[in-house]
Image (cartoon, rainbow, N blue to C red; front, side, top):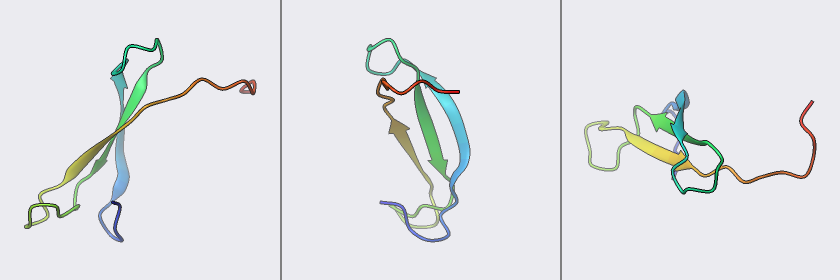
Length: 56
């Protein structure tokens, strides 16, 4: 879970099509997340879903 000052979103990149649905997904870094102590960092994979709303 995101916590204050973990810098979530400071690093965002394409992860390619992680789940095979034909859409590129994202990986989001949280450099100062602390799941294992000592600000070890954490990464989150965000699975993108198709939208019916046209993007302009």
